[in-house]
Image 1 (tube, rainbow, N blue to C red):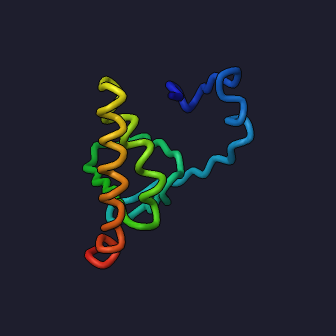
Image 2: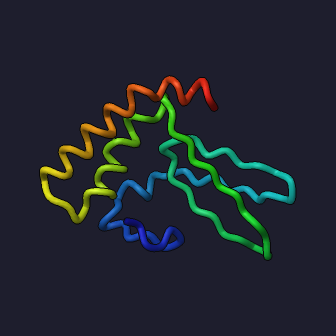
Length: 102
């Protein structure tokens, strides 16, 4: 994990030097869309309320499965991890329904 985006450890993350930053400032009522898989960070410049929504659907389900299973199964047995992955992948068969709902 990158601890400090302002001062990255380029020995651990050498490709970070090639990243192209995109900076923007949001004003009241504005929205920022961050595509699935894009790393991002935010700095709040003044007191505010922020709403974030993450959506899982058929376009990003395959990327979600390994991350979710690694997080949820990090302290569990191998059998648990295999069962969890199978369950989440099977749930992914319903992902097209999520596209219709959302």
